[in-house]
Length: 261
Image (cartoon, rainbow, N blue to C red):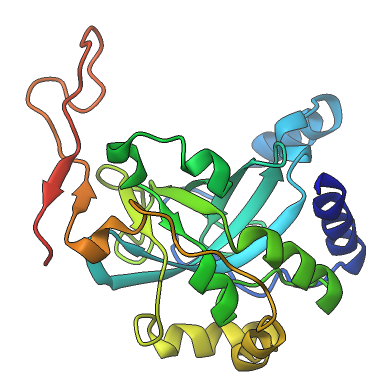
């Protein structure tokens, strides 16, 4: 199955499409990049290797919302590394241009691995079945056959997503603590204006994408995932003292379960 992923990634790279159409959603303060800094960056680019970055081989575009606040929605551009048949990792940006802001990370695992997680851990993860079948998750630039094969693999996986820069709210710098994000699970949850704007930029029709994936076989969502649907909303909270990551502490405090807004 790993050959399937590699083949899809190669097709994406060869296509050269599906990017450079969504600029960053925030403008950070700061002086323009100096000639000296540009020269240093150019030199580093020529002399240093970046194996973890070079291993990124797949681009996915979808949508997230804050766990416990379904009104807080945003588009998320995922740049994915396939670690093995059961584990992927993604860096998430607010756009797909060179100035895009790093927004967070997502870990993606197979249903087989998800089943091995402790009950409390499972509550942090969301399913991908609806995102795939609805056509709201796309792999820009991939030919239809490669897209279909890739999405058939993703449909039965689970993701744990943390956003460190809340670009829908913090328009200059990353403020506050990370937020646990969730994925949509049914029609009527995602803001249609977000979807329409995305579809226009990528020149696609999500309804046609949905129809093309009707034959993708999905398994029932495993117990524990999408805990927000059962009213179990989990977010981090600050702790007293030196903050969330104070040195010398052996315990930083549990995630706080909050009531649904």
